[in-house]
Length: 157
Image 1 (cartoon, rainbow, N blue to C red):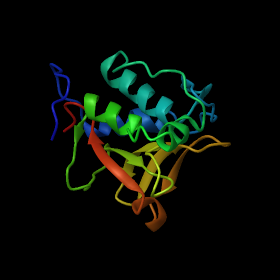
Image 2: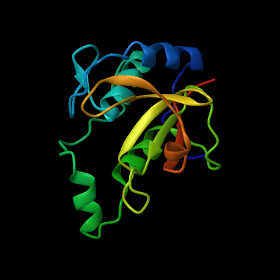
Image 3: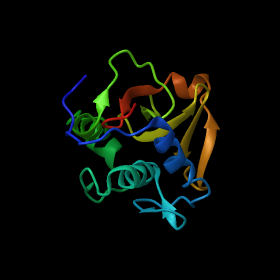
Image 4: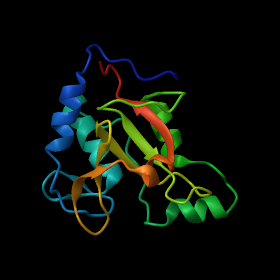
């Protein structure tokens, strides 16, 4: 586990799931984080964070859909999405997860981490699906094989 920001209270996993489910149906919109209007996968997690804690953990810089791949190919090798999660959440070292946890994925197993979602059941997760909306999807073998990190919201119990 890594150091995370301190919060005065705990957050129930049910509160995490309720907040995430409120976003289902929100249209996909790159770089957005507005429930009902539009969001991408990071915008969904940011929106749930705001619902739980009242503010942003940190503001992301502007990014294009391929920003992380270009950065990765340039040899920097940093996983910006994983690094931000490590700054703000507790990481599970063994990649086990429970409902309410945040999953970060490498869509290309040899590439950078670039997608995230929130576990809603042992076999499902909520994420912003590019070109569609926020949906609850099966956490099938394809997705499981691409998990790069598992994180808990601060104070989640």
